[in-house]
Amino acid sequence: MLKKSLSFLLLVGAIFLSLASVGSVSANTIPSNYSFDGSTFTGPIPYYSSTKSQKAYIWNNTQTKRIHNLKNYPNTVWLVSKAFVKPVKGKNEVYYKLYSAYNKKVKGIAWYGYFKKSIIKLPVLFNSQQAYLNDLNSNKALKLTRMVAKLFPNSKINLNLSKSLYLSQYRYLLNDFTNVKTISLNKSISKWSFSEYERMAPSKAIKLIDQRLTELGYDQNKRNSMSDYDIGLNIVGYAQSFYKQSDLKTANQYRYPVTLPGFRDMEDYQACAIQLGIPK
Image (cartoon, rainbow, N blue to C red; front, side, top):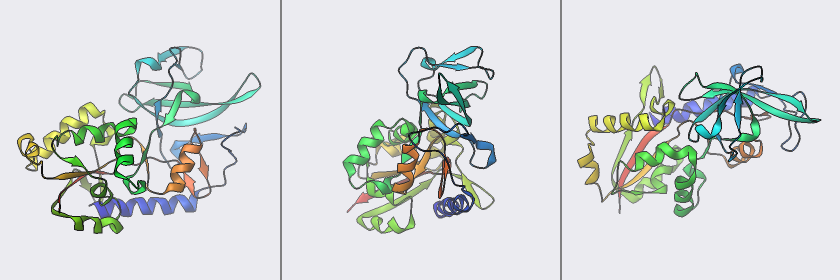
């Protein structure tokens, strides 16, 4: 199932390469003709609020009335469906049409400077265990991943086990473990797999994942007893996920959604798996 997920990612990547048009947007300047429409292929782009302002508002579609204050939504993932340029005091500013990933009724227009892309740097891009753990503990996009790890309170998070879940070329890392157990939480439809949990608020998803693990024979007592095991995690959530350093750099370089030669902002919901193993 994981291989199918990878094949899908590679297929999507190939389609992106063939469809991507030359972008006129630069990271430092915003041309007046910049726009983004997620309905054309990529889908909405996930963002978090990154502002500390107490007066950061979401407006109605005509931008005549303030309808939401971002301070009331510190943990919400915002899905940007469209972006457009509006001249403000002689300067081009980008505005987003967006809605809450957890409640589509919470929606409106907001200035792009209030938001930061929800991005996951996949384990294959880390060269050290400590760097991986630092990111896992600090990245808002990895909230669900952290919550899943806590379901195995006595198992240590292991970078190599996490790497082994993403690309088949890293499967050799499992040679350093015994009693390897792969738990895929994805459900299959036709030849593709998807994860329903990552379309939910983490507080709801974790309850269902807990139930699913119990159904698979890993109730809380079983998980508590697995102190000999290390754990690897492959849980993307509402985020863009990158296993190529160049794509990660481009996604971070442009605060707003972009389409460039060989790159399009996109999101991926597919990954939801756990790798367990006893270190040799």
